Image (cartoon, rainbow over all chains, first blue to last red; front, side, top):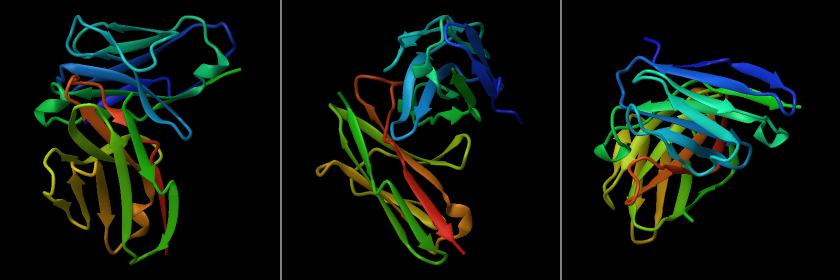
Length: 115
Length: 112
């Protein structure tokens, strides 16, 4: 029972490099999310996808792009990495909107360091 | 801008102690509040609270919401070392079905 799977788990990038974080969920959820977690700041929403074919900005979208490839997969791309993007990234999914009493299920995180 | 503040930032207790964690919020048009437990990796869901004054309970954990005073508390009784974790509080506003605002978390360490 995999749930939400993220890859890679650890990555070191040089400033200016690009990379894509991959996320897949096997719970047939409609909604998917990307968060970043920094010390002392809690989780902050980068982008979300309410359903297949739609994406929307969250609280901190600058420097990131996303693709909802299909219902299962939601990727996060850093086009030109900056040290400020050093963080732990969490992918998450929910069956429908949180308001329906459905909670969000998180992946195990991807530790990204930009040097 | 929505604001969620958790206190204390961290605490250390001994097994068997009772812990009370606080979450206060300033959210325009509050809809619901959620509690998560994070042990090193993925946060896991504990409670969702939407109505004031109704306690949610799961084993040794319980939580209650006060919509008038804009806060929630999470209680853990008879703590065990397995309760050591970061506890996160998140709030959902009416105008968004998807945009949870998280607090910075409270780190709880339970010593044997």
